[in-house]
Length: 136
Length: 136
Image 1 (cartoon, one colour):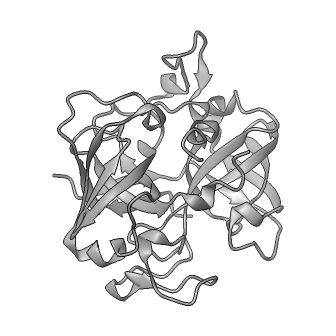
Image 2 (tube, each protein chain N blue to C red; image 1 turned 90 degrees about the vertical axis):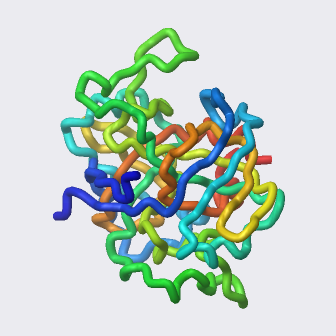
């Protein structure tokens, strides 16, 4: 069985914010998702107000090591299994944020709610509404 | 800037279901997330009833080509930009499902709500509750 997969960067997060909140759910930070022009047509149906899932790379995180299987989240006192945390230090450093579309212009999606650093590589964008049915 | 990233398979989806629904939000299919034992400790805090995000590889999908930037979802009549769809044929074939934990036993997480094929490679597991604040 294939044990590794290679994924391509489809664009980058651009923001002038010097600090980003620790989580998108409490973020009002604005910025852009600058997508490689070869994928621009795929952005066609994003509309102002849409909430979208951004999968990105925690590109500044240190490599994962087995002593990071348990970590203490900032808002907790005790250690938690890494898969029950949002830590950027995880076996695959893939981040997931939900942001709100403000405007789409050519290959740039202006969004609100960023919690990524400027320059974070983007792997995928997905519609968020599909993820609400189970969110009781 | 780095244009590609390599991610490791941390486990596989196991299910005896012959058919899976087209989306997890309408799935009652049960199965297991079999995680590589080296990451087992990271599962420690999963509890029955938890909803978790599973990032996985659409490993049976054909390669993405530019004529797939617009696709017709099964429930729509018109073409949509790929990033506004859940199609498995996308620039990076990464899938996202939300499943419910039924039981954790060693390195196996029994779950309900699968929409992945048996054998789908798993990249990451994340807590779902954090994604509900914006889901109004």
